[in-house]
Amino acid sequence: MKTIEEILTEHPLFQGMEQNYLEWISGCASNTQFRAGEFIFHEGEDAHYFYIIRHGKVTVETFAPGRGAITFQVLKENDVLGWSWLFPPNKWAFDARALDLTRALIFDGRCLRGKFTEDPRLGYELMQRFASVITQRLQATRMQLMDLKF
Image (cartoon, rainbow, N blue to C red; front, top):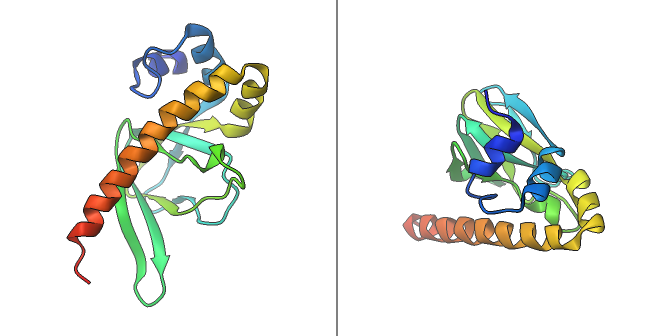
C-alpha cells in the first residue's frame, strides 16, 4: 500500500516537485470515497477542496432550466477534480457527481493556502500546475461544445 506522498510523487500534477513541497501537500490530503450517484459538490457551495480520482468516474455537470442536468465532462482515474479552491470567492462553478463507487484523495485548500503564506513559491508552482489542468479542461469542453447540435 502506497503512502499519499508516494502517490503524489507518481502523479502527473506533482511530478518533479520539490520533496519538501510534496511533504507539505500530502499533510493536507486524506483518502475519501463516494457512493454511486452521490454528489461530491454543488454549484455555488463553498469550494475548499480538490480531488485526485483514484478509482471510479465522476461527472462534471451543470443544470440548465428546461433541460435538466447537462454533463460536460466525465473524469476518471488520475484526473484532477476542482480548482475553485484556488480562486476567490472560492465557490464551485459546477456540480460533480460520482457515477460509480469512487475513491479519491481529497486535498484541503485552506490548509494549502496556509502553506502558500509560509512559502509563496509553493503557491506559484501549484497555480502554474493548475493552470495547465484548467487549460486542458477548457479545451476538452470546447471540443464537446462543437459536437452539440443546437
